[in-house]
Image 1 (cartoon, rainbow, N blue to C red):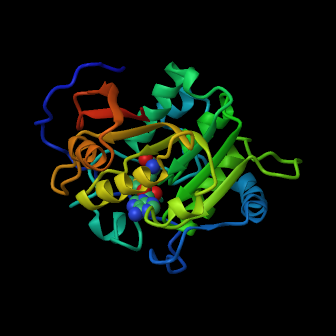
Image 2 (cartoon, rainbow, N blue to C red):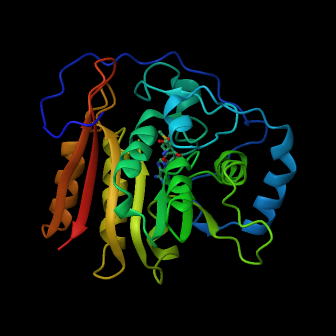
Length: 285
Ligand SMILES: C[S@@+](CC[C@H](N)C(=O)[O-])C[C@H]1O[C@@H](n2cnc3c(N)ncnc32)[C@H](O)[C@@H]1O
């Protein structure tokens, strides 16, 4: 599946027809609030009560291959965030796409499946987690702790916590859940994690605009202190046509702030149907 070369992206992006966003009965939380930890015991208890009747999105081959289950509505969204479905896929500063499962998340799972050495006994943070399936895969395959962070508490409650339960990594029966949940913006995440150490940070489909690329780069550079973060793996479309985010620009932002970072493209996916997608690794040297 993976190729290791780096060619120019110049094919047309075919934005997939947008599936309707679900779980939007209550107004979404605002972006300006600081990153806060949600009560994992409550989230997981609520998710366990919803799980038995939950329909599953089990038509996604990459998830089946990885032995993962996803709550219904985890439609894979192949296209860029705009312009198709803008009204539902993205409300800047309010809702940033977390209710859907995006295709680079599947690439990241596939990559981790082929490279289990990234996971063994690791403390993992997934940023912009949405459905949180890469993080959940990590926890099922050697990682020992998982922190999930997303812009919207509602996404964590409705999707991430439910997927944690459906994939049986909720630590049912143990007093301290192996998964913690944090909601807030990347701007406020470093403060919340100022005393934390993560061996591995995961993120997928988070570079979809210049703003999101810059905000994430700033977040990572603030988090990136020696011995606090090991490796960051970012799975992304190489270029988000029409919205301006791209892997190269993200790399420039990072190196502009921290020239000593080591940034490599470890794998690329070109399925001939959609944009070329990369798995990027970032390390502090
Ligand atoms: C396109 S979705 C990708 C979701 C998931 N990682 C996937 O690949 O399926 C982008 C995710 O990043 C999160 N996000 C975007 N901007 C953010 C910000 N400034 N701070 C925190 N999270 C943000 C959104 O809430 C959303 O979950």
